[in-house]
Length: 82
Image (cartoon, rainbow, N blue to C red; front, side, top):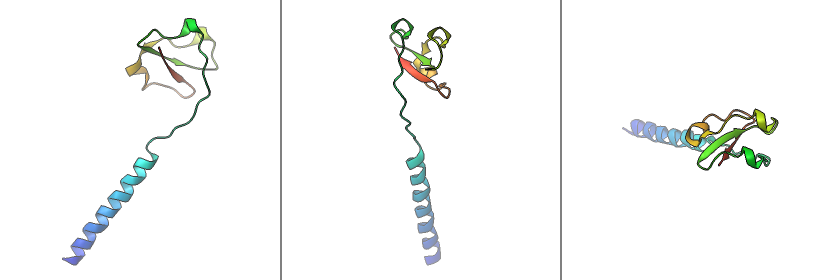
């Protein structure tokens, strides 16, 4: 019986340590430099736009719904809220 109890304790400890590692590394914050968007290219209120700092304003993707765009930000892009 002690063997089964010890195995149970080891399992619980393993789960706590394993899940604790996931929580610690689950989110990573990388600061981004300030992005300047010309006033005429800001998305309308309630919309968002993915903005690429190295592209001219006329070559930026169009505005769209924030709930869709927040999951489609490619590397180098920044989500701008209107």
